[in-house]
Image 1 (tube, rainbow, N blue to C red):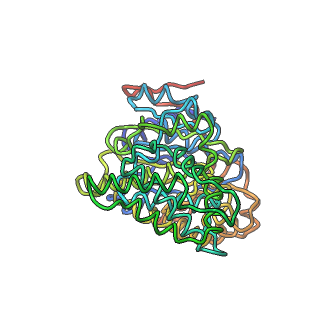
Image 2 (cartoon, rainbow, N blue to C red):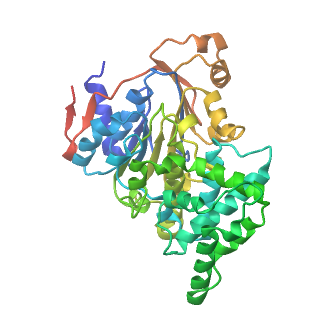
Length: 432
C-alpha cells in the first residue's frame, strides 16, 4: 500500500532529478557524477508489477524527456493530460489506431545517401523478422539495392514519387509480370520513371545516386528480380492500410531533435497481439535514437542533450527490435540518452537479438529481477547474487533483486508508487 513516505519519494525524485527503482529507492541520474550509465534491464513475469513499480512512477516524476512504448495504449489514455499539466509536450504515435495518431513519416529523416542505406537495411533486416536471410545473403543485398534506389527517388525529390513508404511500395506495381521468362524490367513503367528522373537530375545537379543503385539492381537475373520484388511488396504490405497511409504520408508532426531540447513525452502505441506494424515501430525507435545522437554530437555543447532522453521500452525482446541497438547502447550514455529494457526473460531477449543479447545486458549498469519461471534467467540472477537457483525460482511474489554496478545486490519488496503523481508547481496529489 502506498503511503506518505512513498509519496515523498516521488516528490523527491521530481525535485532532484532522480530515477526510481522498483524497491522505491531513488538513484542519481547524473551519469558524469555517478560514473554509471542509466541503462536498466528489467526482467519479470507478466503481472510482476514492472509497469506499476517502475514505468508509471518514472514517467510521473517528470524529470526527463521520455519515449515510451505503450503496448495497450493505456499509458497515453491515463497520463497524457497530466503530463501536459506538468508542462510537457505530448506526442502520440498510435499504431493501434493510426487514424487517431500524430503524423510520422520515416522518409522525412532521409537526409542523404547514408540515411537511405540505413533505412533500406532496416526494412530488409526487420522485414525478415529481425534476422537476415542467412541461407542466401545475396537476396538481402539485392533487396537492399532496390529499396535504396526507391528511397533515393524520394530523397532526390523525384516529382513522380510521393514522400511515403506506401508510394515506394506502389512503385513496385509498375512492373508487369506476364511470366518469369518474359519478365523485362527495361520495358516497365518503373524503368521509365528512373530514366526520366536521372535525365532531369543530371541537368540540375549531378549524376543521380538513386539511378546508380537502380542500375546495380538491374544486373540481377530476371527470375530473381521477380521474387525480390514480391518479397519487398509483402514486407511493405501493412503500409497500404488506410490509417497508416494517412499517418506516414506528407510532413511530420514530430521532430526528434526537439525531444532533446524541451520536456517531451512520446507514447508509442503498439499492439502486443498484432505484430503487423512492428516494422514501423522499430524504424521509429531507430530513427529517434540516431537523430538524437546526431543532434547531440553536432549541435549540442559537450555533445550532451540539453534535456536528457529516456527510452522506456516495454516488450523489448519482441516488438522493440532496434536495428544495431547492441552498438547504440554502448555509446548513448555520453549524449545523456538512456534505455530501460523491459522483458519477461533472457530467452526473450536472445530471440530478438541473438548473441548480441549478452552485449546489451552487459551495457546496463542496473539490472532488476522481479521473478519468473524461466530457468536460464533465474540462473543468471543466481550467479549474480550468489544464491541457490531454487531460491531464485521460488522467490516470493512482490519482491525483487536489484543489481547496481559497484554495489552489493539488494533483495527487497516491490513498491507500487503508481497511485501518486506530481502536479504542476510541485503539488502532490493522490489519484485515487
